Image (cartoon, rainbow, N blue to C red):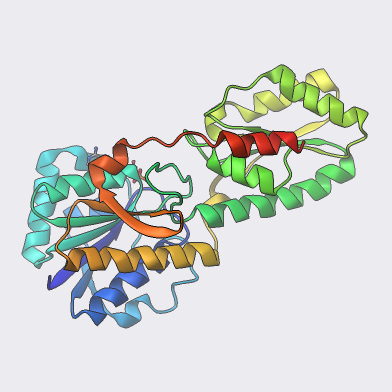
Length: 318
Ligand code: ADP
């Protein structure tokens, strides 16, 4: 392996830069050239490719977002488009490719590996919605961002004795709501994996009122439904002022936590090792603290059961 490429694709996540840095420096120390591919598969298709040296990744370990930029490029599902992208890689002499992104990005990586480009995937998404790995890069930072927001909302809501409804990201995966909800001391946590009853939510709020609770916090994953509607219903039935905050994109940004930086660094390092070993169509994960790798297809077909135990703990503490 003489030359590799690296790109970030799909939604950005804090810690992607730390992974880029680890890939670039691990490659260079092994005398492998690195080409940075900008704007994900779109930039690959358009040939937006520049060499990276040691200093091109200086001063980025602490930065959110991705210095390589990212893009959505649905056209990449078309085999003809992928063939052109593989040709671009061949012209540049890029034999191996590291793709940092979510499951859509991994499908693109698999497509390229079928065309003879050695590809390795690193999971970068704040949702933690990839079953084969205990953690994705960005999740830890995002949950800390949510907790920080919850703390601030709690101050004002508690002063006014309101109910706060906080909507966090997570279309199909409720991990961000569950973890941040527990760490933020939520009274109710709604996740897409579990049915909820409006009566139950309202009962919890009314119980809180009886126990002279100053504040009730309801954390909702976006995939559950319309948080404004749920808030209105709580207010109508309980008679307690209820305010909704949709956290939105602030959850994506910010300085990555130590955990995400270290995870990203270990994964980036392993990605280059795998390419040196001649592996392809593998994705890197972490299981029980170890860095592991799986075949892309195998990884994408895995399902992870919802953490019922953790959910139960949260509900027991209300
Ligand atoms: P994520 O990687 O975070 O899941 P997306 O699902 O948007 O985000 O996928 C990111 C990019 O990966 C897409 O814009 C597209 O370029 C590529 N991609 C997604 N699905 C496929 C597919 N089935 N085949 C090839 N490439 C894909």
